[in-house]
Image (cartoon, rainbow, N blue to C red; front, side, top):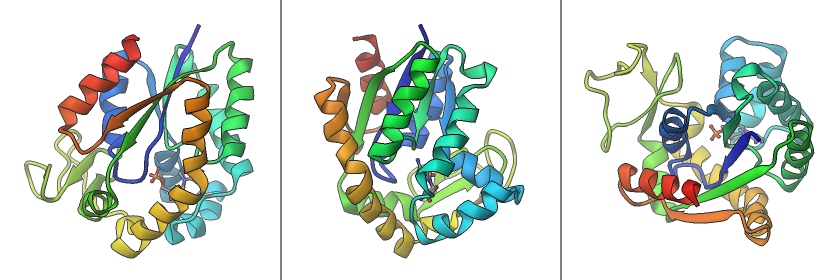
Length: 216
Ligand code: AMP
């Protein structure tokens, strides 16, 4: 049976960083809805053009568009063994759609690590975050700068600050998260799938706790 892990948490909690590490350690595909939207934006596809205005304002892209994009992504061969879902679902409607989708693959959401951090930490982390243009590798100007300024350690591409990582938009994204995504915490807790993890700890410690939650 495939394994599906849903990473929940506000922007800046460390979902992207942990998803990348976890994908390597578990051999599961890393499916990031934000990365998929950014890729479409870069390639100026119809989907990218549609998502653009929402993303720039820090709002959520409509559910139907997002759900279709994820359905297509997790149907691909590299998700046969399952996936680490980073940034999806973000609304109750998306969580319902995911459940139906996964039934189609004879699977279900197995674990929902919920990575938390205080709001000032989230703003500090996101507003100092730099992202690699080619593959979305993540850096922080203060806490985790690339070895060579402006260049990704992994693939040598340019690192840049996402438009929506500017302070004003980050604050909006956190508000959107509290309004629209927080209900999922209760939803997955009730289902007995939630594993709460303190995202203010060192990256290695968060990974350790994630892996131990996975073993259980
Ligand atoms: P992220 O990289 O996860 O912070 O996502 C960046 C932006 O992409 C969000 O602020 C939304 O505009 C959009 N986005 C990503 N995932 C979703 C989702 N599951 N539902 C709706 N919009 C999303």
